[in-house]
Length: 100
Image 1 (cartoon, rainbow, N blue to C red):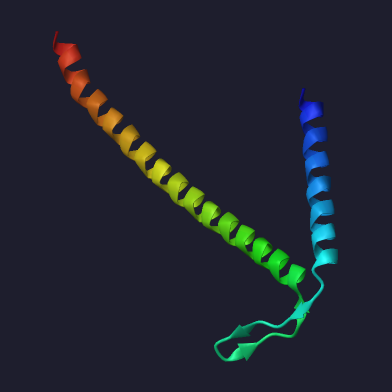
Image 2 (image 1 turned 90 degrees about the vertical axis):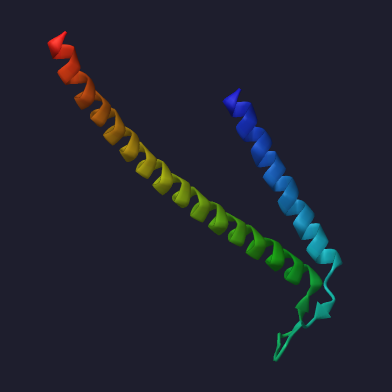
């Protein structure tokens, strides 16, 4: 089952690469982008679109990593608090257990 899943993923990636290649071959008109005071060199429309997807994916991965790190730090802090609370509960239970 895992081998079939790997083959399907590889086929999907190859299909997406082929799709991007066909897209870039069909959209070769050179366009320059103007940002407030900055103008880029002319590149094909497909290059700009593919670059925007790549940059968006990288930003998404970065934000996900930051959220994961924040969650893991919070989880470690809560785990420490839970351990301290359990130890405090055990110390309050132990004296009463000895007297009865």
